[in-house]
Image (cartoon, rainbow, N blue to C red):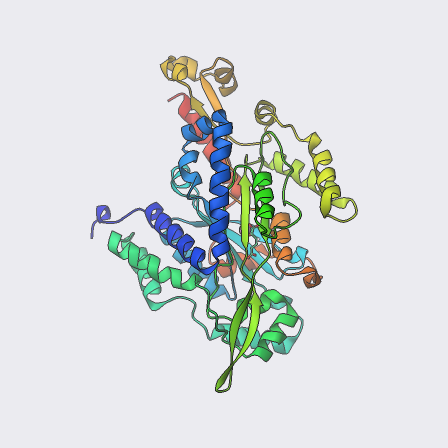
Length: 452
Ligand code: OOG
Ligand code: NI
């Protein structure tokens, strides 16, 4: 088979993300409500802000907005994680970043599988926040061994998915027909199962160790636990959620509301309590499990290491005050972030964020020698514009907040904080890419193109 018989990984990712969205809509109808609500708010924002609409149209971001979302799953073994890496690679998604959640009392560490190059991101930026359970953080030795044993006996991938992954690796791609088969097979891994594989007693024991341990170990597969659409105004979306009686989290995670949005702001509604059947002799015992929830997010400028350090400092400042809930926190957050410049010219000149530089019509008409001048000069002369590069990743403190809100207050555990990126990458079977290097490259490519 020749390469032109293959469809692009971007195409497969789009098919997959659409199919996943369709599946989750049937599984968790409230997700469908969120998608509609976010769509209405985005339309309104674009109507009210023609400049933003024009900028998003120009950069290609407008088109991707309606399909943009992220999901999250949690797996139990190194082998599951490594095979997921191969599965996501078929769709042009690579592991980016390392997130240690043990510091926040959650026994997992994580990465995000996502596309990395500019064109692929514009086509469909679908991302999956993927966590690996850290069984070594379970204290009870017997329970730890039992959990490992249960996990070692399951296979979360269908034979068809495994075969198509291998075929894609061998041939360098998939035909349209095989791509569809792949999507159907791969989706099986992410589907919800309302029957547990362990008895109710075992479930309770796992649950007592940590709710997440029960979530990862008790089922046939790593059900997708949320799917998050991107809103252009999270405060309006949060208010609309409340107005429709959806119990959204009190606090929006991340930076405060600003004129120039940075990084990522997120809010979620609490996980649903769902009926589950537990095998018990000849009968099934009924019980419940809470894992699946809904979330929305607003994305803004990707920050440089300098900008990120400032963000981390100001966030820590706001969180240091007593408690971190309610109006009081919102005020402290707003106050802390007055030291973070809030106009794009300053953000760019101070090297706090990443920008994509694009020639204007006048710039395209200018001679090459003029276009070779420093970007700031071109911007001053109206020959180029600088558009914010959107943050495509996640924030560990926010992720911890999202996890916690779905675990209930009593789930706070104190794990001796120890990030272990090496062990994670060993399990993954590859390094997780450095997010800053990816943004840096996107910015550098845009600068290089000005003179071309
Ligand atoms: C993942 C929670 C983190 C986010 O958007 O930060 C997350 C999980 O609950 O598995 O999705
Ligand atoms: Ni999320």
